[in-house]
Length: 209
Image: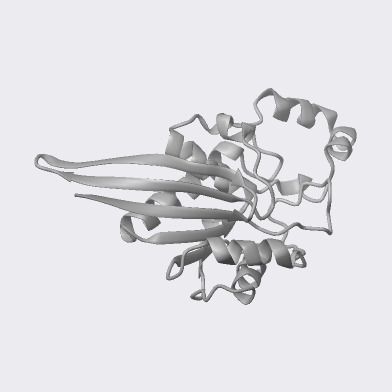
């Protein structure tokens, strides 16, 4: 007998305050005016799911907007470790501004953009590890359920890296658009000699509708 736990990942609605800048964990509002996309999401997402958001307001605002546009959703649980990568002193800056302010630090970062952390921030590899721990914990605790997580490009890439057993840096190659849907499933099978489990990827960066 097998049990599938279905993760439905939604990247939050667009942030308009700092376009082109590294907003990372800056707690910014998002633009939820795309009613057509939100209604399409409400129509395609499952009812009765567990909802999960990060502690950053743009995820809760997006989840609330989806529910308002046609999906009766339970209040989401908040998982801070699903937040976007923290860019430390570089948050709110453009890459050009970073290079102009400290060319040496910028060059050092780009030698290993997966493993190196911005000043006062965290590496992408660290973000993948913390998000992955949440995903594994919630999957184990909610076997067989649908889990809808309104999260960030970074945490969705972490979910794909976990599902595909990728090096963290490979996750950076995946495009994740605002309000897109990425689905991964964890399948656990009970065997005579124990248990076997595997992840599978159903869809990546699907537009709503």
